[in-house]
Image 1 (tube, helix red, strand yellow):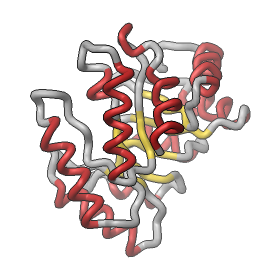
Image 2 (tube, rainbow, N blue to C red):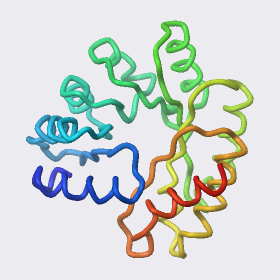
Image 3 (cartoon, helix red, strand yellow):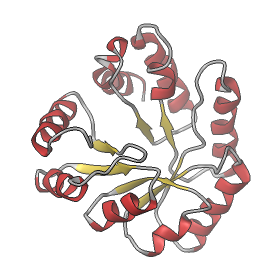
Image 4 (cartoon, helix red, strand yellow):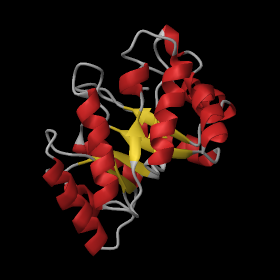
Length: 206
């Protein structure tokens, strides 16, 4: 997104929405200035999109929240203070893979009656994929009623295979664990229809 004009971002967002996306995630880039971030969010909101901002920069997350973003990716134990400055819904993730740090953030949000989504992070195959599936199961058992998100792109983008079957299997796991949200990307050539695939799969299986 930092390398695209607002007009191009809006055009792509309209295409994603047509294919079944409910929220448009604005991805920032490390160490790259995103001078039109606020303008992008405001234009998408004007067009009645739900918007999330995905950044490793606390400043960009705060700017995103103050510009009207509905969701912020990602909030961890070391930047939890951002929630004192914005009203956006946080996506909570573990700090450096430490699930206890995620539980700490969840418990704080519950104590403060703060709406949130938790994501223990899906890892790619051979980089902890199986263990990461188990984390989702453990999180759901520990917190039966919270909202959970799975970022499926770490599997669909990073596995050079057709995404239709992968998406359906993941949606089966998502359905069984009552995961409420998914985050996906559509960048690699073999992922060129993955948003529509997710939309169809959720309607079939959920």
